[in-house]
Length: 401
Image 1 (cartoon, rainbow, N blue to C red):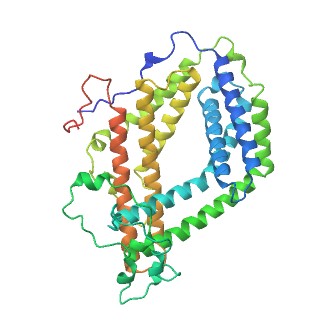
Image 2: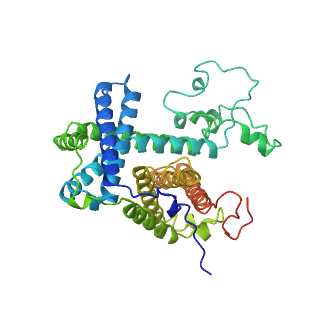
Image 3: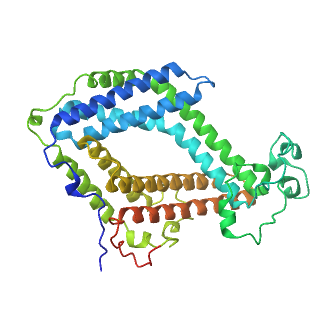
């Protein structure tokens, strides 16, 4: 029997009155103003080390504004000048993609190192123990890194954490402990070398992405985009069809495209946690993206378009529907991050002449991230099929949590 996919977006939740094209024009002008303000902050922050945090935040604001402008041009294209919108939209997509690479590399490295630390079984210091002296942890190993520590097999010198004494500790006590920061001194030999390899590869990729972003921001192509956005902040080119037009049909079309894409997903399988569907073809030598991830990535993009269309209509985002859409979007973000982290671990495992212990650690890390992909799919189906308060949840073949 085909499973019923409940759409958490209520078609009747939109405003009763028609939404004119002026609402879209005001929305685009506001986002264009945010783009120009973020660009000015980015230029004022500069590229120095002291201004890195401000630069990162300004770049994030640039991406956020560019995404919303591009989404508005895509969803409400019938009421906009076609030549102008078709020329600006790919340029905004280029800006978003270029500026996102550096942040993606940094976030991927942090996620993989934290996962390595967790998978290595290193326990944090007890809370009642005195704080260690600064530099004491690193004094146990030479400056070359933990993979160069002396010892018969390297494991004795790598261990800087006390022996585990929480074998009989309850799961609740262990879950309440804070997640420690990545510390390669407490990792095993294979995990330490895997972390060092990932650090080298992703740091290099982040450096290249940073240089590419700086070159892009100083290019004539970006200046052309900024000039068009500056004009957009003052005037939005509308088509003749915008007179008396209603924006709700275009927003409903975006919602229907999202519902159709979600209906094609295997939500019945995703409703069962740890079903191992995300691990199929996990050992394939093909370096291309995982074949099962593409439909989920497409749903993520369609969900973002739908949420931005609701912003144009002025639909409240703090309602039950808005909160469920936000939770579904966060689950799909987790899915994308985990799938890309798993791909990075698999790519590192293809490095020639690495030690077997390093390859094994990267394989375990890859499987861990694919399980995270699975958990994100489960979280998405739970958010998507969640019904209104007081009603029964969608039947997924599993008892309710």
